[in-house]
Image (cartoon, rainbow, N blue to C red; front, top):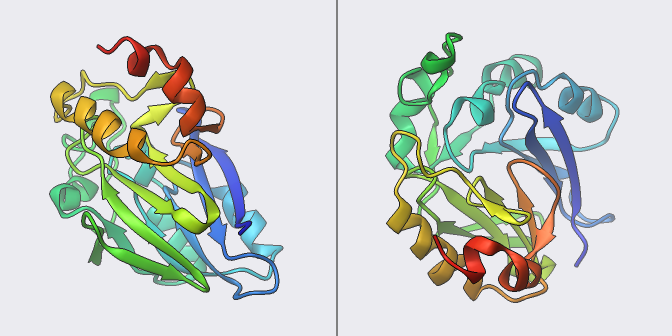
Length: 216
C-alpha cells in the first residue's frame, strides 16, 4: 500500500510537517501531522489539491511542532486536534512547550481529543496504531501504518541520531525503552518519517545508528 505522504519543512527549526492521505483512488480525506511554525507552504499545497483535512495529529507538543495549529484552523476551519493527554497542557503554556526559553512564547488552542498507546485509527482505507514513545518528551507518540510500512516518529528517531533528551520533561531511560522495545520491534522495511531531517528505515537505523548500535 502506497500512501500519499507530503512533507513540508516549516519554520526556523526546519520542522517536518506532513499531509497524509490514503492511496490514489481511495478517499481524499487527509491528516495534517505536526503543523509547526509558519505553515503557509502546507496550506498552499492543500489549497491546490483535492485533499480534505479531517484532523490534526501531534506527535508531541514542543512549540516547533504545534505553533501553526491556530493558523491552519483559521484558514481551513475548525479541525479535531489530537495529542497524548500527558501533554495537553503544553499547547497553551510557553514554559512547557519550551517557546518561553527562546523569547517568543507560543500558545495555541489545546487538543480536543487524545492519542493513547494502542489506539487504532482509520484514515480512509488505511489503519494506524498509536505507539507511545516517550523520552524526548513524556507524551511523544509514533503513528504507525503496518500495511504501508510507514511510521511517523516525531522527534524520537532520526537518520543516524535520536531526539534530544536534555530538555525539561525528557527522560533518557524512557528514550532507551522507546527505541529498543518499541521502534526497533517494527519490521526492518518500515519507512521512518521524523520530525526533522530526511526519512530513513528501521532496518538502516538498527544497523547504523550509533545510539542504537552502541547505546547512550
